[in-house]
Image (cartoon, rainbow, N blue to C red):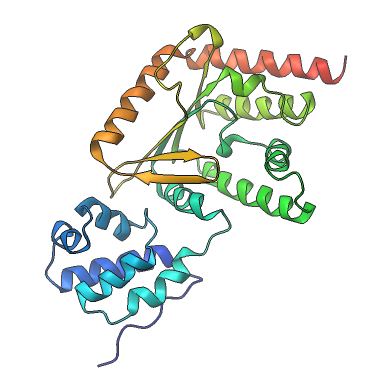
Amino acid sequence: MPGPKDLDPSSSPRALLGAELRHAREKAGLSQEELGLRLFVSGSFIGQLEAGTRRMQREYARLLDEALGTEDFFQRNCGAAAKSKHPEHFAEAVEAEAQATAIREYAPLLIPGLLQTPAYARAVFRAYRPTAPEDKIDELVAARMERACILDGPTEPLLWAVIDEAALRRVTGGPGVMAEALRHIAALARRNRVIVQVLPFDAGAHASMEGAIKLMDFEDAPPLVYFEAVGTGRLEDDPATVRHNRFNYELLMASALPPKNSLARLEAMAQDYEHEEHP
Protein backbone atom coordinates (compact mmCIF):
# COMPACT_ATOMS: atom_id res chain seq x y z
CA MET A 1 0.00 0.00 0.00
CA PRO A 2 1.54 3.37 -0.97
CA GLY A 3 2.43 5.82 1.78
CA PRO A 4 0.93 9.29 2.09
CA LYS A 5 1.87 11.87 -0.52
CA ASP A 6 4.11 14.84 0.13
CA LEU A 7 2.39 17.96 1.39
CA ASP A 8 1.78 20.85 -0.98
CA PRO A 9 4.09 23.70 0.21
CA SER A 10 1.67 26.29 -1.21
CA SER A 11 -1.19 25.37 1.09
CA SER A 12 -0.21 26.13 4.71
CA PRO A 13 2.34 23.31 5.13
CA ARG A 14 2.49 23.61 8.90
CA ALA A 15 -1.29 23.28 9.33
CA LEU A 16 -1.37 20.30 6.98
CA LEU A 17 1.55 18.65 8.73
CA GLY A 18 -0.17 19.12 12.08
CA ALA A 19 -3.39 17.60 10.73
CA GLU A 20 -1.46 14.62 9.36
CA LEU A 21 0.23 14.15 12.73
CA ARG A 22 -3.09 14.14 14.55
CA HIS A 23 -4.50 11.63 12.04
CA ALA A 24 -1.48 9.33 12.35
CA ARG A 25 -1.48 9.54 16.16
CA GLU A 26 -5.18 8.73 16.45
CA LYS A 27 -4.82 5.91 13.92
CA ALA A 28 -2.08 4.47 16.14
CA GLY A 29 -4.39 4.70 19.16
CA LEU A 30 -2.11 7.03 21.10
CA SER A 31 -2.95 10.05 23.20
CA GLN A 32 -0.82 13.18 22.96
CA GLU A 33 0.76 12.28 26.30
CA GLU A 34 1.56 8.72 25.20
CA LEU A 35 3.16 9.90 21.97
CA GLY A 36 5.06 12.57 23.87
CA LEU A 37 6.57 9.93 26.14
CA ARG A 38 8.01 8.15 23.10
CA LEU A 39 9.66 11.40 21.98
CA PHE A 40 10.69 12.48 25.51
CA VAL A 41 8.52 15.61 25.24
CA SER A 42 5.29 16.72 26.89
CA GLY A 43 1.82 15.97 25.61
CA SER A 44 1.29 19.71 25.20
CA PHE A 45 4.30 19.80 22.86
CA ILE A 46 2.58 17.23 20.63
CA GLY A 47 -0.58 19.33 20.81
CA GLN A 48 1.34 22.38 19.63
CA LEU A 49 2.78 20.44 16.69
CA GLU A 50 -0.73 19.32 15.76
CA ALA A 51 -2.14 22.83 16.11
CA GLY A 52 0.66 24.30 14.00
CA THR A 53 1.94 26.59 16.74
CA ARG A 54 5.31 24.81 16.89
CA ARG A 55 7.71 24.03 14.09
CA MET A 56 8.47 20.36 13.52
CA GLN A 57 12.23 19.93 13.69
CA ARG A 58 13.89 17.15 11.71
CA GLU A 59 14.95 15.26 14.83
CA TYR A 60 11.32 15.05 15.96
CA ALA A 61 10.15 14.21 12.46
CA ARG A 62 12.43 11.15 12.48
CA LEU A 63 11.17 10.04 15.88
CA LEU A 64 7.55 10.53 14.82
CA ASP A 65 8.06 8.41 11.73
CA GLU A 66 9.53 5.67 13.93
CA ALA A 67 6.83 5.90 16.61
CA LEU A 68 3.87 6.08 14.21
CA GLY A 69 5.12 3.79 11.43
CA THR A 70 4.81 6.48 8.78
CA GLU A 71 8.02 5.49 6.95
CA ASP A 72 9.74 8.82 6.19
CA PHE A 73 6.62 10.97 5.69
CA PHE A 74 7.31 13.56 8.40
CA GLN A 75 11.02 13.69 7.57
CA ARG A 76 10.18 14.40 3.90
CA ASN A 77 7.68 17.11 4.67
CA CYS A 78 9.05 18.98 7.66
CA GLY A 79 11.36 20.91 5.32
CA ALA A 80 8.42 22.49 3.49
CA ALA A 81 6.82 23.47 6.80
CA ALA A 82 10.08 25.03 7.99
CA LYS A 83 10.54 27.53 5.16
CA SER A 84 10.44 31.10 6.46
CA LYS A 85 11.45 34.65 5.54
CA HIS A 86 12.63 35.20 9.10
CA PRO A 87 15.85 34.23 10.91
CA GLU A 88 15.75 30.64 12.13
CA HIS A 89 15.72 31.57 15.83
CA PHE A 90 12.70 33.84 15.29
CA ALA A 91 10.74 31.97 12.62
CA GLU A 92 8.95 29.64 15.03
CA ALA A 93 7.82 32.59 17.17
CA VAL A 94 6.48 34.44 14.12
CA GLU A 95 4.52 31.40 13.02
CA ALA A 96 3.10 30.94 16.51
CA GLU A 97 2.24 34.64 16.57
CA ALA A 98 0.13 34.20 13.42
CA GLN A 99 -1.88 31.44 15.15
CA ALA A 100 -2.36 33.25 18.46
CA THR A 101 -5.69 34.53 19.72
CA ALA A 102 -3.96 36.90 22.16
CA ILE A 103 -0.46 38.40 22.33
CA ARG A 104 0.80 40.26 25.39
CA GLU A 105 4.18 41.88 25.05
CA TYR A 106 6.47 44.02 27.18
CA ALA A 107 9.02 45.91 25.09
CA PRO A 108 11.88 47.47 27.09
CA LEU A 109 14.18 48.70 24.31
CA LEU A 110 12.31 49.19 21.05
CA ILE A 111 8.79 49.43 19.66
CA PRO A 112 7.33 45.91 19.22
CA GLY A 113 7.66 44.58 15.69
CA LEU A 114 3.90 44.33 15.14
CA LEU A 115 3.58 48.06 15.86
CA GLN A 116 6.51 49.33 13.81
CA THR A 117 6.29 51.52 10.73
CA PRO A 118 8.41 50.75 7.65
CA ALA A 119 10.73 53.70 8.35
CA TYR A 120 11.25 52.69 11.97
CA ALA A 121 11.84 49.04 11.01
CA ARG A 122 14.34 50.13 8.37
CA ALA A 123 16.30 52.16 10.93
CA VAL A 124 16.34 49.17 13.31
CA PHE A 125 17.53 46.72 10.66
CA ARG A 126 20.16 49.13 9.38
CA ALA A 127 21.50 49.44 12.92
CA TYR A 128 21.60 45.64 13.20
CA ARG A 129 23.32 45.24 9.82
CA PRO A 130 25.33 48.37 9.04
CA THR A 131 27.07 46.81 6.02
CA ALA A 132 24.14 44.89 4.51
CA PRO A 133 23.11 45.71 0.92
CA GLU A 134 19.97 47.78 0.55
CA ASP A 135 17.97 44.98 -1.05
CA LYS A 136 18.56 42.80 2.03
CA ILE A 137 17.24 45.56 4.27
CA ASP A 138 14.25 45.88 1.93
CA GLU A 139 13.53 42.16 2.37
CA LEU A 140 13.69 42.39 6.15
CA VAL A 141 11.39 45.41 6.25
CA ALA A 142 8.90 43.72 3.93
CA ALA A 143 8.85 40.59 6.12
CA ARG A 144 8.24 42.70 9.22
CA MET A 145 5.38 44.59 7.59
CA GLU A 146 3.91 41.28 6.46
CA ARG A 147 3.88 40.16 10.10
CA ALA A 148 1.85 43.23 11.03
CA CYS A 149 -0.91 42.14 8.63
CA ILE A 150 -2.36 40.03 11.45
CA LEU A 151 -3.64 43.34 12.85
CA ASP A 152 -5.71 43.92 9.71
CA GLY A 153 -8.49 41.81 11.21
CA PRO A 154 -11.07 43.76 13.22
CA THR A 155 -10.70 41.92 16.54
CA GLU A 156 -8.17 39.06 16.57
CA PRO A 157 -5.59 38.58 17.74
CA LEU A 158 -5.81 40.72 20.86
CA LEU A 159 -2.55 42.68 21.10
CA TRP A 160 -1.76 44.23 24.47
CA ALA A 161 1.60 45.98 24.56
CA VAL A 162 3.38 47.55 27.50
CA ILE A 163 6.11 49.76 26.05
CA ASP A 164 8.88 51.13 28.24
CA GLU A 165 9.43 54.87 28.00
CA ALA A 166 13.06 54.07 27.15
CA ALA A 167 11.91 52.55 23.84
CA LEU A 168 9.93 55.68 23.03
CA ARG A 169 12.71 58.09 23.98
CA ARG A 170 15.45 56.36 21.96
CA VAL A 171 15.51 58.35 18.74
CA THR A 172 15.58 55.64 16.08
CA GLY A 173 15.83 56.95 12.53
CA GLY A 174 15.46 60.57 13.56
CA PRO A 175 12.67 62.73 15.07
CA GLY A 176 10.48 62.46 11.97
CA VAL A 177 10.60 58.67 12.01
CA MET A 178 9.80 58.63 15.73
CA ALA A 179 6.88 61.03 15.31
CA GLU A 180 5.40 58.82 12.60
CA ALA A 181 5.98 55.66 14.66
CA LEU A 182 4.22 57.04 17.74
CA ARG A 183 1.36 58.44 15.66
CA HIS A 184 0.92 54.99 14.14
CA ILE A 185 0.64 53.33 17.55
CA ALA A 186 -1.76 56.00 18.77
CA ALA A 187 -3.94 55.54 15.68
CA LEU A 188 -4.20 51.79 16.29
CA ALA A 189 -5.14 52.46 19.92
CA ARG A 190 -7.75 55.06 18.92
CA ARG A 191 -9.31 52.53 16.53
CA ASN A 192 -9.54 50.13 19.50
CA ARG A 193 -7.41 47.63 17.58
CA VAL A 194 -4.67 47.37 20.21
CA ILE A 195 -4.29 48.14 23.88
CA VAL A 196 -1.11 50.05 24.69
CA GLN A 197 0.33 51.11 28.01
CA VAL A 198 3.44 53.19 28.54
CA LEU A 199 5.70 52.22 31.44
CA PRO A 200 7.14 55.60 32.49
CA PHE A 201 10.60 56.19 33.91
CA ASP A 202 9.11 57.35 37.20
CA ALA A 203 7.56 53.91 37.74
CA GLY A 204 10.99 52.98 39.08
CA ALA A 205 12.02 49.36 39.54
CA HIS A 206 9.60 46.87 38.01
CA ALA A 207 8.97 43.16 37.56
CA SER A 208 10.76 42.69 34.22
CA MET A 209 13.95 44.71 34.44
CA GLU A 210 15.89 41.71 33.13
CA GLY A 211 14.26 41.73 29.71
CA ALA A 212 11.28 41.51 27.38
CA ILE A 213 8.18 39.37 27.81
CA LYS A 214 6.06 37.93 25.01
CA LEU A 215 3.10 35.73 25.90
CA MET A 216 0.88 34.02 23.34
CA ASP A 217 -2.47 32.28 23.88
CA PHE A 218 -4.14 29.90 21.43
CA GLU A 219 -7.57 28.45 20.90
CA ASP A 220 -6.53 24.80 20.68
CA ALA A 221 -3.04 24.69 22.20
CA PRO A 222 -1.35 25.57 25.49
CA PRO A 223 0.05 29.11 25.94
CA LEU A 224 3.66 29.95 25.11
CA VAL A 225 6.22 32.48 26.25
CA TYR A 226 8.98 33.62 23.90
CA PHE A 227 12.43 34.56 25.12
CA GLU A 228 14.77 36.50 22.85
CA ALA A 229 18.36 37.70 23.03
CA VAL A 230 20.87 38.88 20.42
CA GLY A 231 20.80 36.36 17.59
CA THR A 232 18.86 33.74 19.52
CA GLY A 233 15.41 32.97 20.86
CA ARG A 234 13.23 30.13 22.08
CA LEU A 235 9.60 29.25 22.76
CA GLU A 236 8.76 27.79 26.15
CA ASP A 237 5.56 25.93 27.10
CA ASP A 238 6.46 24.87 30.63
CA PRO A 239 3.32 25.81 32.63
CA ALA A 240 5.27 27.15 35.62
CA THR A 241 7.46 29.32 33.37
CA VAL A 242 4.46 30.67 31.46
CA ARG A 243 2.62 31.33 34.72
CA HIS A 244 5.60 33.18 36.21
CA ASN A 245 5.96 35.43 33.17
CA ARG A 246 2.22 36.09 33.05
CA PHE A 247 2.35 37.23 36.67
CA ASN A 248 5.28 39.52 35.86
CA TYR A 249 3.33 40.95 32.94
CA GLU A 250 0.35 41.66 35.18
CA LEU A 251 2.65 43.51 37.57
CA LEU A 252 3.92 45.58 34.63
CA MET A 253 0.37 46.44 33.64
CA ALA A 254 -0.27 47.65 37.18
CA SER A 255 2.88 49.82 37.13
CA ALA A 256 2.24 51.31 33.67
CA LEU A 257 0.06 54.29 32.81
CA PRO A 258 -3.59 53.43 32.10
CA PRO A 259 -4.41 53.12 28.37
CA LYS A 260 -6.08 56.56 28.20
CA ASN A 261 -3.10 58.28 29.84
CA SER A 262 -0.71 56.24 27.71
CA LEU A 263 -2.43 57.43 24.55
CA ALA A 264 -2.08 61.03 25.68
CA ARG A 265 1.61 60.43 26.44
CA LEU A 266 2.23 58.89 23.00
CA GLU A 267 0.56 61.78 21.19
CA ALA A 268 2.38 64.39 23.27
CA MET A 269 5.73 62.72 22.54
CA ALA A 270 4.89 62.52 18.84
CA GLN A 271 4.17 66.23 18.86
CA ASP A 272 7.50 66.90 20.56
CA TYR A 273 9.31 64.88 17.88
CA GLU A 274 7.46 66.79 15.17
CA HIS A 275 8.65 70.07 16.65
CA GLU A 276 12.21 68.75 16.63
CA GLU A 277 11.85 67.78 12.98
CA HIS A 278 10.34 71.15 12.03
CA PRO A 279 11.49 73.77 14.59
